[in-house]
Length: 382
Image (cartoon, rainbow, N blue to C red; front, side, top):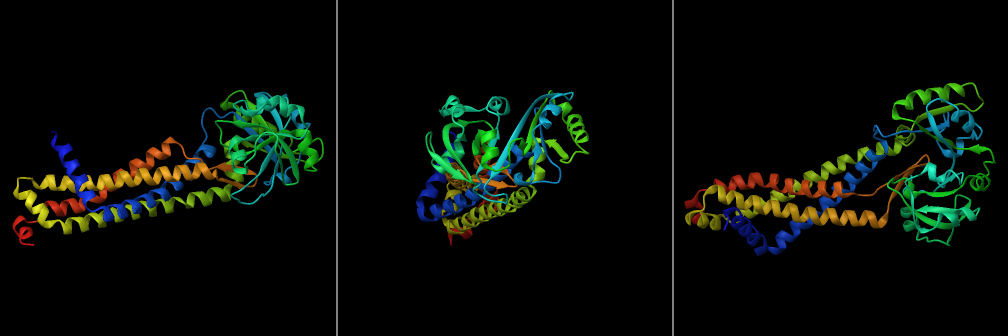
């Protein structure tokens, strides 16, 4: 049989001989990787909604010097003038109402769009329960994102009220974009009246341009056109708009990376300490193995194998528990009307498991070196 396989089997036997110690170490590693996975999920969720790409073709037209949706009021007729500008493909007026404009873990966001423009505003959505026809038939009908509906325990036919807006659930939608899965889509006139904004007034315009190369020129043209109007505009790419509007939220999330670093250091120290104790307690056994013909490097590989197994098992446990917990809770961070869905993906799981395995091996290097250089005769007399 392959010597490497034999050494791994022996490493496994050594771990299972001391079940309590191995289990406690594994639980410590799992706890650290649980925290690491949660932090990594936050960082990746933030990157998805703030990092620009060549495929971005959406601009957000907002009221100048306004952040909270309740303070941004623009005349709906701006849409007709924006549509006539060069490079503009589509303009959708949007009314947004939130239950809390500050930083919050539980934000309810209503988006009011013209019912004939919904599929253009969010062409990627897919109705998984209810129907689009049911939404179009009711003035107070709402299409809820699947994460929103799951968090609130809502299904088609249910009534729901928040921020002074009472709606009837007409359907549940799914989208590849996390923001769509955390909002409620309603008809624009209904939300204008329910929020007392008044007909003809919207929060923002979502403008799709013909290509990403036109983003800057179209944004400049829109702001220049309305610069001297009573309601001047501030136009930015959608992801840049999120990054600026939710600046406090982004700073908070970026700070959490230090928690991830602390978790990594704690995992490495825990595995290294555990294996140093193992090496110190097995000096006679290692000396016997050396006497039987095992070279020093084989003893070192035994220790590395134990560290790798502890890291891998703890990483799998902690990462999967964090993934299941975050999917079950469906956390959503919100600030200034912008929502950030905290949803782990396959890349987060792979990163967590890989990091735990690597940490386990790296933390084993010093204990492995100690085990390899221990004198045979002195250890036999121990």
